[in-house]
Every structure is written in C-alpha cells, then in structure tokens.
Length: 111
Image (cartoon, rainbow, N blue to C red; front, side, top):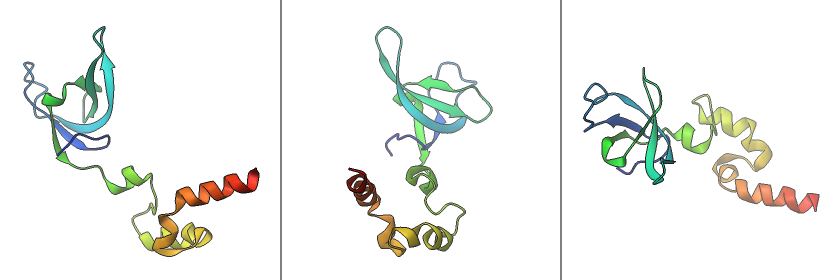
C-alpha cells in the first residue's frame, strides 16, 4: 500500500532497533534538513512524533473513513449524519457527494 496521511503504519529497518516495530499514524510528508529530504512525520503510539524515510515506514492499514472524509456521518451511524446534515443539503447519498456544488452555490448567492 502507498503511504498517505492518516494511514496506520509500522516502523521498520532502522539501525536504532528500539524504534522498529512501533506503530502509529502517518501525519504528513515533510522536508528535513538542508538537503530538504522528504520524510514522513509519524505520530507513534507511546513515542514523540518522528520523521522517517518512506523505506522505514510500512503501511499496515489505510486511513479510517472518518479521518479521510473529515467526520461526515460522525458517530458511526450514517443514518444520523444523513438525517441531520444531509436533509438540509438534499438528503440521502446524493446529498453527500455534491458538497463542492453547495459551496459554489453559496458563493454565487454571496456575489
């Protein structure tokens, strides 16, 4: 799997073996040092965040749906999310997809 923000990851292949096997969440890709090497900032369970080369990060699970969508339908029951916010945006599954259209529509009314 490809490393993406929010993915559950495991640290592997470091010379400092005490870090190997720790799990956490890939936060973001950062530029480190004068050479601006690209590394993944990983928020580990029980450790401080650490910047790692991609070769030292193993994806063990994709991002959770709530993390990717930004909490749409939060609370675990999609019916609650659809009934509350979906009703004002058109309701149902159709109400979830056209969020950019709603934003554009709001912009059109303001201008």
